[in-house]
Length: 390
Image (cartoon, rainbow, N blue to C red):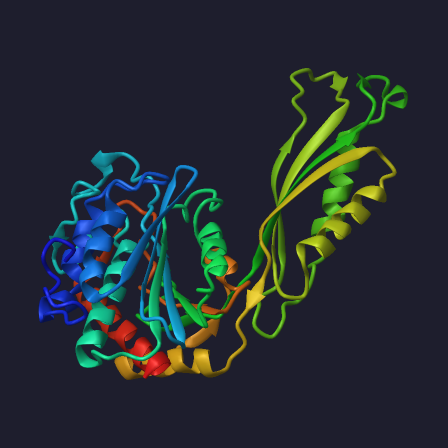
């Protein structure tokens, strides 16, 4: 699509522009493994500019990002996504080149077909169809596309939002096109996400000979008791929109090669996925309390990749639900499960939800999306724009 699929009249696309397949293939053919862009944002910019979008390429560190906007008035609707992909793994495991964008048996194959180059192409096709039907439009439409979602997420959406805030361009509502559908297109609208934090703990004891434990202080025993206290009881039972908080021990190490030496320290790594009953600060205090019960010296480092957030049901969420019903005939469930996404950054500024393709093949060998589903997703995104902007 970015190579001639868009019509020549600004803002008046031809019908070929409303098919997401050509643009999805062009994006997949760019091997944009994080943080490489490999031309993907150029392909997208070429598709958006003829539709009347003012495009801004924003580079932070090694990461290329794109912000594109059409219109200057409110309400301002923003579609957010990413063109970076995870590595494809061994090429011989794929039926086709993972960056070929091959179509076989009605499915589009390639890294990013599902997560989420297909979704970006569907949105562009959907908005092209929307603009063909509503050439004057209402309000503003923007796209915030990053090349740093699958990586550290330090130089992507968060920094683009800072740039947008400085220019007074924060949207009123945002839709992230992650592949959030579970079994059929549109069966899930994600209205929030759990928070995620990781803790690295080192507990210190006294090294000694295992035959004379009274002369040592075994930190392994103490750290095991700490971990038992943290895992023996559920942290909570969940809340209205969130499942229960989970704490998983993801690493344990003492670095001890000798079977007759009590080590001087023991280390553990924990990951907590938490709901809206907690914050990373309150959970950090919980960890400190469990460690302090051992009355031993310890060190702890905590990193939070995102706090929990929730977009309460209201006009925006109801508009998304109506759009899904128009296309699929069924009402979507509201959900907050799964890992983190860039919606956590948008939630600091505006109402945000996630709605995209069925995610059953994302990050897998032979990642794919049915072409019919891709086209239905484009129709769904057109419906979202009509419900949100009129």
